Length: 400
Image (cartoon, rainbow, N blue to C red; front, side, top):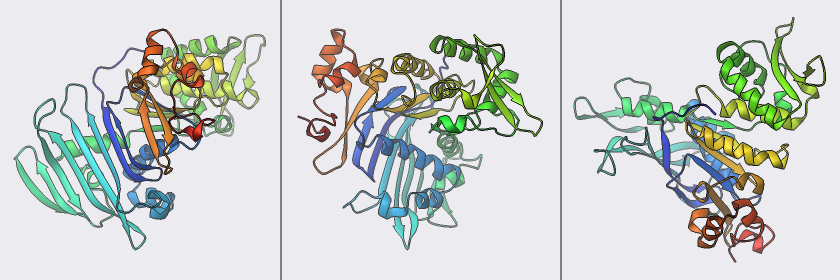
């Protein structure tokens, strides 16, 4: 894997309230690789969607992200009242000051309303006293000018606008702009094998789309701009699929781009549409993990789909290597993927008696930690019932 980067943002803590199954959930002391593990319906995809919601709200607008999820009746936790709340704590790098972003959203007359939006940072490195850089409610608030040390009152055009997204476009608010760039730059993957078989218009593209439908374009980009990185991808892919010799993008006369893969036993490459789902998905994941300029946050949902179970341990190790350059969030059901993880990297999710998501880190389960120290693997321990929770066949996943 490529060399790591020392300076990169990392989320340390995430709190979510009243968002679907997440009535009140906190993930604290997050690691560079964070994996959510649990039965179907435990809330893994809901946590993933929190990142998707915030990313869409910043890159499109809040109203569109709200409407796509059928507004407050489908977003707010069943039986709950009050706004949907998010609190994000992160650092630009491990030595920088702690930044806290709080966002609370309610709905009035069918439209989202930002009832609270606060951006804070500690006034000294470490855990110093926080200072409000930005504080808004319903379209009005104030922003602190770091250069002059003064606070200016500001008004937005509408109460459904995010102040960080709006004011973060101005160079005179560098801290606000940094948060806007951070969230807008997240990459969340929902790769589909069918999408990777598409024939897009020719032209290099730097990053894989959420579904993977521009995989030929990314291969073309790597061929032209980062051939050494493509060699690394081929080498890793060849170790997992030994018969595969190379992958190439070929422009067609009609302007589309064709992906072809060369099998060692045959003289001519074959079309991507005839290649196995698992091979294409593995190629797509490797282009994400070996991205020359990766996003600060990378999300991958259920990478085990269509992949042989014996490939998942190595894929988890590739994810950990990539986590030296990006913070990775992965959801999985696979004990084979979990086998490669460390206790601090794995969070087990389950539903309590009221139907709400609860979470526990594997490193907080003494019996699990003791077994890992004795040489056991996390996925095997989960299959053998050592977690005492999140087992869909025992008490519907509830703790014993």
